[in-house]
Length: 238
Image 1: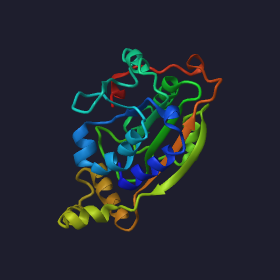
Image 2: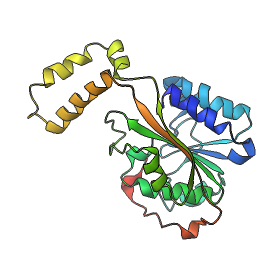
Image 3: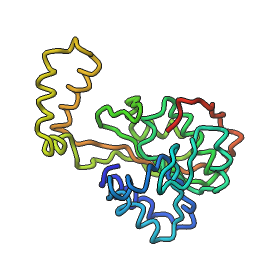
């Protein structure tokens, strides 16, 4: 998560009272060390203000680790009861959709968990290089595409956010990585897909990364039974 992304989310979340958000389920949370040390702005700009407002946070991930409150695969039917036991009113689904093979299944599951009147806060890359975690499907939606994905939930707000960062920042810290692109350029026949990804990164020397951010509200008539079922498959592990 970028610092500008965390700040954008916090401003958006501030529009709802704590009792409308709490408990707030943070899907794909990673560990406390990741949130507070590797990406300290995530805790400082997003989670700390939420805690100060009295919002109860539930950090969910598919792996164990310090700072993970609930180990579960959100797309597993077997894990669903223990997620539902927390009765989340809102969900943070940040930078997850590009890492699952069926984002529509994840959208349906989020709506099922929060239920009618629940809120789903979503961020996903809009202009960003390929990055494995462990896969990247290159899902890069605009707000209108997200709105279709999360139907019948209503999009309360959706926009494309320039995060003010780019590949230039990585090159500034490690200038030698440019030589990888230069050395690889004449040899597209040695791993063409990797060559394309390498060359594509050069685009972000001149352009900032951008994310699509949105918040959805599940309508009163969208009981979980009316949503299409989610298929439990191993590749959905996040």
